Image 1 (cartoon, rainbow, N blue to C red):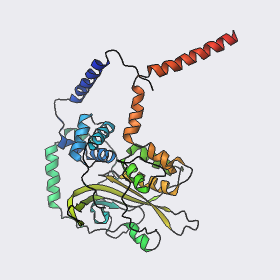
Image 2 (image 1 turned 45 degrees about the vertical axis):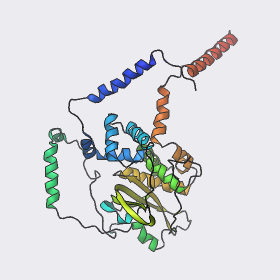
Image 3 (image 1 turned 90 degrees about the vertical axis):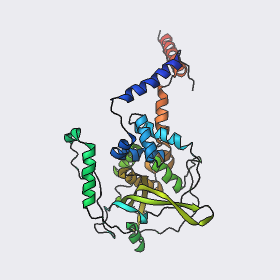
Image 4 (image 1 turned 30 degrees about the vertical axis):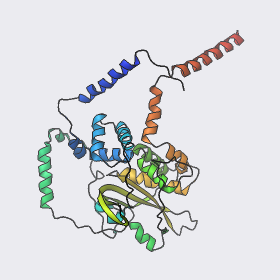
Length: 357
């Protein structure tokens, strides 16, 4: 593809970059990283998930730098991530030991460990609260801290997954533990058919809107119709790494917040003697993406003729950086290529005109 340099382009580009700071300056009141992390936590979680880097401070910085654009923030955070040295791989995290802040099931009313509604916008009226214009952040913080201090802490025991009880009944297949090193999509080129570990990594880093749109198309009939959310859980999971001098031992390095979802479908068995599941897990609180990911995971496992069941179609078109980068490149000069198209059209019109004459 041919590009032509614009006369005076470097100076114009430098001024364009300075203009970004002008638009970002907005008001005299500064937006601190602490404010972004505390008051835009869902946006921070979205950026971390799509960038594939759990770093709230850096995600908040990226959001501030690019005026709140999640696409640009993902680009910045992903680019920064690529410069970091990878020292360890964590051990496999067992989400059964998750410190739960929210846990629901759409399949069963009563589940072992109980349902925990937690924080959700699902039951709000979706009406604008105009009184927030005059809200005082310090007063709100003090009010919430006082309320928390007055409440008795809820003791939530480690909860087995809802799917565990279905496996005990023989309604879901039990897979043997697999300690094989997972395919790393950040260090290897994706090949098809892709292993499931590569699929899940790609889906969790994919654009939220893209994954949600694909899952919606499944629900509308372009795939297996209407799975059921067996369990959705959100909470903190501890991470450990093998001890350097004795890999049989592990060292605790911190915790991350995850949203994990398992969906349930009728199995492929003609007699429908079993159920099949889909799996989704993302950084932070991002329930719709986790559900959509589980829906698409099951579609790809099922296979078929729909685009949502084609792993190459699904996995190659959902990356936020690649999709936005390729669309953005259309704004770059295409003078030579377009001129050749224009010349071809003019030549054809002239030839047709001569024939008619």
